[in-house]
Image (cartoon, rainbow over all chains, first blue to last red; front, top):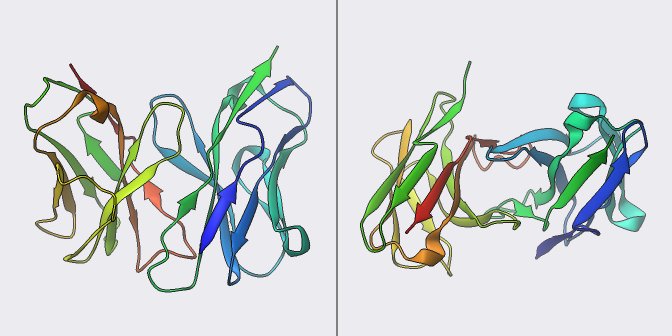
Length: 114
Length: 114
């Protein structure tokens, strides 16, 4: 079984401040982890992913995330928030077991204040 | 550019009137998925096709059906829409089971049942 928990359904930061969106997962086998971003009335766009190898992964728009096995976490960060980062962010997990679909967390709405 | 295209972007239908949503892809991916996303919630998988093999999620209502006439196209049919079916419907694709690559999403169809 696998699941994803995103702590904080809403996060508000000031423009230029650090963005930290939290994601914890559970998986009985090594996970593949993803962050997606969704702008209003749009589909989901892949920001970054971790499958194997380097645990710090960089994605688009200046975002990065670090896979920490000991903490079962995959938190998303960005050093300096921009107004255009305001969106809904979803963490998702799958693994190499046959039949395991992508499981999403509940999402975090990021608001950026001027 | 290779992509996933959903039509229409917005659809309004009357209570009980059948409606069909369309998805096409130029990625030549084996797997196509349909998700339902209600306001401020994570996407919920309805069903998926692995090539021609149809896989229904256990809790998907019978009111929802799907067709995949060829690799490129997949349709979502809602036989008798209820007010509770108002949602964003997302189509996604992946190659194989897409565990390492993640899924590619379309822009979604926002369905309103009145």
